[in-house]
Amino acid sequence: MNFLAHSYLTFSDEQIVGQFLEDFIRNSDRFLFPEKIQQGITLHREIDTFTDSHPAISEAKKIFSPIVRLYSGAFVDVSFDYFLANALPEKALREHSQKVYAALRKNQEILPRNLILMLEKMQKEDWLFNYHEDWGIRFSIQNVLNKAKYLEKDLPVFDVFLNNKPELQKYFEVFFPDLLKHVAKINSEFQKFL
Image: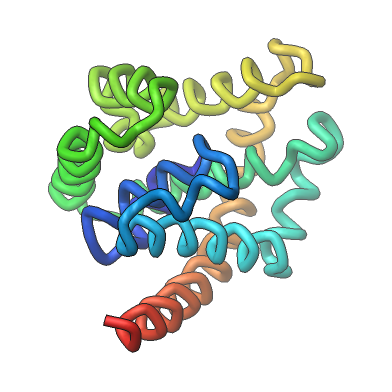
């Protein structure tokens, strides 16, 4: 769900495509794509694994878990996209958003139909850029609620986000530099095989 962070932590357009594909394909299908797209898929998984095991994430999940239980990680991810969007200069955020949409459009012929349908909405409503706004994250939080099979759709998750924004930002500021280092290490491993 944290599309901004995953796309921001890439080193090529092909990796952007792989980062998005990961949420839309079966595990065995990853080998059907070119190597650099496979790197993006692998990078997505590495980011998720690192994130899930980080102490700051464990603490941030406690903010949401009283009302969303096992879905707390998804809402932390969405919250952290807000803080990342606000950490970037507005021009850089806009340029990054357009770069992501262009990379996905350029590779549209290999994208699953449900990803193409999501891309249509994402680009039209400029989700990535609008994550820097409270209403943009509210929209994203509602998307998670709508897709969550076992959650009521009117839970006040956005209120929890607003009421705990400073604390969540502190967790983001602890976590994100560690994630940047981890991703740089993975990319250096990828470079060895080029």
